[in-house]
Length: 622
Image (cartoon, rainbow, N blue to C red):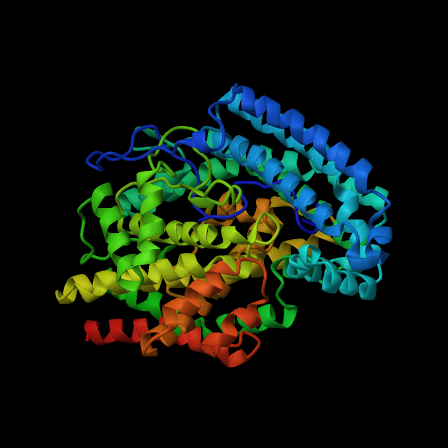
């Protein structure tokens, strides 16, 4: 990986995943035997000798690597047949693999219970030690980018081992215009632990410690948010009021975190020469600004046809002229109220995957059979749901907070899609397996779509079909419209932060402005909703990440349309796309399907799928 500000070598398990957070002591009854993950494939325990040995080995090997190669890469490049650059690349990749394994273990242990001081200490200590170790590797990417491109090209042609890393090297060059002097890069890297990393950790530990008293129960965030989907309006209102009250009582902390991280980003962007506040994210995602602008413009233009129209219909279904903000995710009267046990959720997803390709189901089945999933709700458990790839020599792990809701089944399908993608891309190795965030959501959203379509095809009952279509429309609105609104909110925050520190009221006003525009007049934003920006972890961990969800959803909608119309061969092309990992640009990956994300009409195709769902709902409602 390149230097920390452009592509972080120290991985965080909290960088991605669904936006719900935290867990509760007692999960709903009747869910069956929920699995907990077994992290022994990484290390046997926090006090394991092999973990201590690897920590020392990583620190020592990084210094040896620096001594062996620092200041010598250009000389190696000029030698016949590219010198020993292939050996340098292998050593670098092996170190990235080792550091990634250690950091993944510490992060996953911490995610299992962020309130445990021993786990928190392990996580903090590992972050510090591996940041120190990787500081000795910083020179490698900086030196490579300082060598004349023609020399590097010639070395890749003459040295097959070095040439194997061509996609990574070409990708690295895109960072070149924003690369700083070596000692500045090292300073940015080493101070990340006490800077951005520390503020991220403060957010995590503050959020998971919050408790919300609803009807005499002390709930953490995710179960409290889950009350907004309750069938009883009074309970939804109570939950919204308690959530707001608790958020507002912690508003100073969250405002300080947001101001500090936005300023930290502005400093980095200014030093590196990024012109737009989101350009560093676009660079990391390997997507052009004009493509993201076309996506956001298309979504904003479509809001009246999508979210505004849908929520107007839903208000009518619920017997309201205007819904309160706490009614946005309320279940319809037609929604089945039974709890979905874990075994049924498992079979539902595996059957849907198998219907597409048996190989896909076989990979997903490993997650259930081999202890790669942590599903129960419990105190201190970390943000929402994610699939963490760890390192190619091991396998991914999936974290859920499963509560037996239909949306939980879709979340399972989503995260297993990530997991399958990560397994298939693993053959690319530690440097090239990782997929840019814009395409990282492809397999997850595609997995959701397969599961939804499988369930819908089995449903003949008109009322049940309406409930399923409505829920899918809501999920897609949440993924596309809501995430683009989040992106616009972040743009307002980061733009205005350049003029000085923001007050809580200012941030709240930005939040209400973009929410009102995206949700439409059918939803009333009541007092208290202005504080709901505080709980979204993506704003903290991965600024401007959120548009990747909309990108992925619209992309998958177009991809799924190709699949439905394809006579044969789609599955093979799909698996080739996943196996490519980070070795190809989105234009190369989509070309075999006849898709082009740089074409504005591409986004209209994706959005039309959501519009068609709402059209069908109107037909069922007639």
